[in-house]
Length: 78
Image (cartoon, rainbow, N blue to C red; front, top):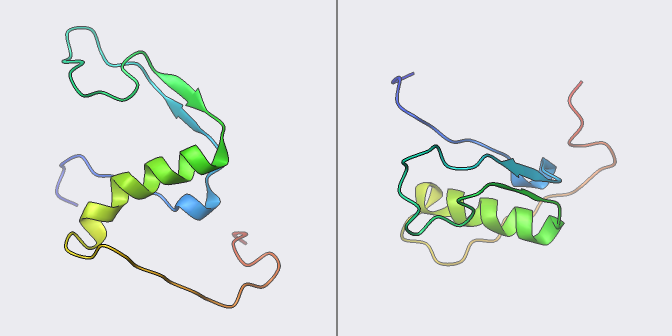
C-alpha cells in the first residue's frame, strides 16, 4: 500500500523459517542471524515471530491471551 517494507505472518501456521544472510556491507550489530539460518524448532520459530510482531500489534500491552474454539482443519485454506 505505502511502498515501504512491511511484515505480516501468521505464526500458528509456520513450521520453519529460512533466514537469508545479511547482504555484504550491512551492519551485523545486534543481528540475531547475520549469516542466515534455518530454524526448525517449532517453539523457537513461533517465539521469534511473536517477538517480531508483538510491538506492532499492541506496543503497550504486556500480556495478551486469545482463545477460540478449534475445529479440525480450521486453518486449512480452501
